Image (cartoon, rainbow, N blue to C red; front, side, top):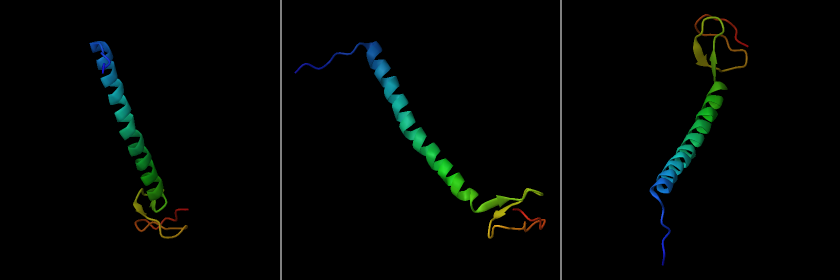
Length: 72
């Protein structure tokens, strides 16, 4: 049984390409999960447009617990 013989250049190129593929295989799902988490949290958190205080949204017309401004 004859195994293929790689030159050092081909071997190093294969290692680099495999490393890039593994990097993308990890990077893409992590970025998608982080984006999904931010989108999910943005539905329940709100930042006051007057004072910048961040709080949980309890109703659509939430007023800021810090400055009592209405945030629509």
